[in-house]
Image 1 (cartoon, protein in one colour):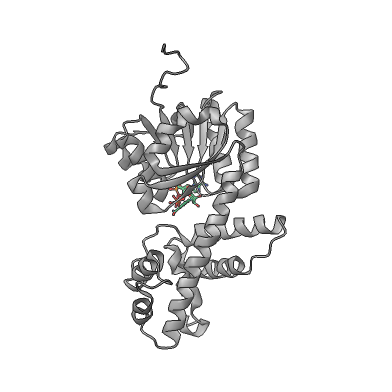
Image 2 (spheres, helix red, strand yellow):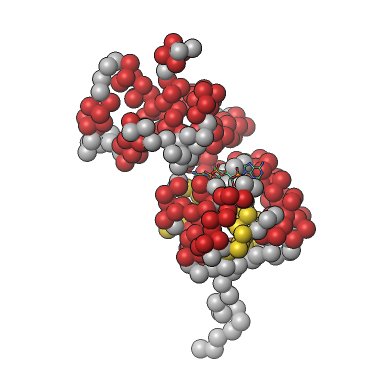
Length: 301
Ligand code: NAP
């Protein structure tokens, strides 16, 4: 059998990571560990600078970072991704793949795919499932929708950042819709845990007694035990911030509204995240929604 150019393994892609916050920094490190050339950019330079020690080229502007085969955006929301792409525009070239991994919802995905198309980029709608630790360990699950022709280019990137890639459709949008369904599970679950702990406190039940009662049974979960242990030990280091959980709850509610679905639990979760944010817990892990369950007099208010 003779080999042809079509059979040849494509060269390893160069990658630009725009946004090196909680998720983007771990993803960039795993790309570097996989031996891919990586450029990074972050608005707050101090969060990108440590990646130089891992071998990344740290760029001063999105435009400097973007001359790569694959551009990953891992920014907080859709308007931010749009603004950063505008800043990057002078350096973009047709044929680059935009692996858009921020959670931006349905409308922003449509808008970003259009912008990418106008710039000649190949748009992959690629939200991720998993949080800080899976991002650091390269064990994210990546949902991807976009043209299959981009697969050969992005597969080394996806293999480096995740343990599983789910190619859900050939058109952008489907992966983001799946992500909203998955995050409905996440935001209601964490709110549910917080309310159980709130009630335990209110009823003067040691929360550990509740957790021990659940342990090993059909109602137990690693998530229940892990999030509760973090809260009870006072460790609110964010894996996923209250502010981003509120943003996602709002994206879910927008999507539900336009599709004629009523989601009472997500609406309640959003109210809790909003109260926790107003009380100053926005940058803490989303289990800080616990603090939204205190009656005002308990907060001294
Ligand atoms: P994060 O640590 O808060 O990072 C957010 C990033 O967005 C930072 O790089 C931040 O830059 C940048 N940013 C915010 N506003 C900006 C602006 N106006 N201009 C330029 N850059 C701006 O959040 P994260 O947890 O990594 O999340 C990033 C995305 O992944 C979000 O869409 C989130 O919903 C999604 N996600 C998160 C998780 C998770 O568990 N953490 C899981 C799956 C998906 P600065 O550093 O300068 O603020």
